[in-house]
Length: 283
Image 1 (cartoon, rainbow, N blue to C red):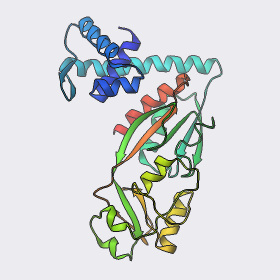
Image 2 (cartoon, helix red, strand yellow):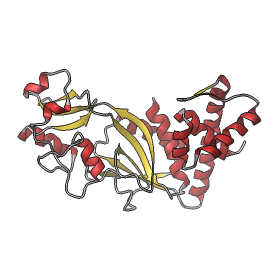
Image 3 (cartoon, rainbow, N blue to C red):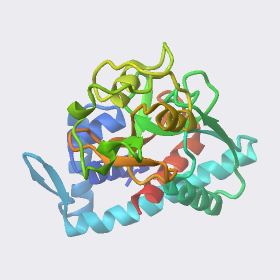
Image 4 (spheres, one colour):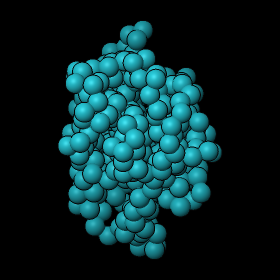
């Protein structure tokens, strides 16, 4: 079995869909399907049960998935150790806004254990650049939230979080169990500076133009709510000051936590980081 074929298999097993796996691998679907068929021939048993809506793993496929992940992880560690010996032992990570996400803490611990010789540099960025300096070459990989312009970037989803609206605790709407976006149409919303990625701005404005104060950082958002009664959106599950409340929105699509890197970047450290991140956020 070639490592490349095993990577194809893992992508299909994680996406449970040939089309999505092909997109993730930046290839067309027919050669991916042929590669999996050949792998099934080599193994001597079906790896997937196919249906019009996607695929599911067979018992044999589940066993191979565990083994393939372990083998690919070992292969990546070999590349990392060779890169370290050659002096390529630094990885710069961009982290958006709030670094208290428990997924980040689990990832940091897991990566330290598996890659003790790698020097990790962290660039904490504000809310004006969802790619955390990736396009400017300031970081190798970003831990951030979608959506944004993904041109020439590779994006791996790590988790999705439901979203709510942040309000003052004494706001009448703060007593509600859930809200709809339309109930916030008469409110002022915080805005990002001119030139911010349009898809990013639109998402955090609930999909339509809004008016309100310009902010750059999480703390500025919270202070705008506290001092001016401005409203804005935030993922659920984050700690807030007692003076603020967050109410779930029932018609807002979830916020996707993603890892993103430049499509053309062949740094072997990125691959090993992505695999570790996928496992850390899966818990």
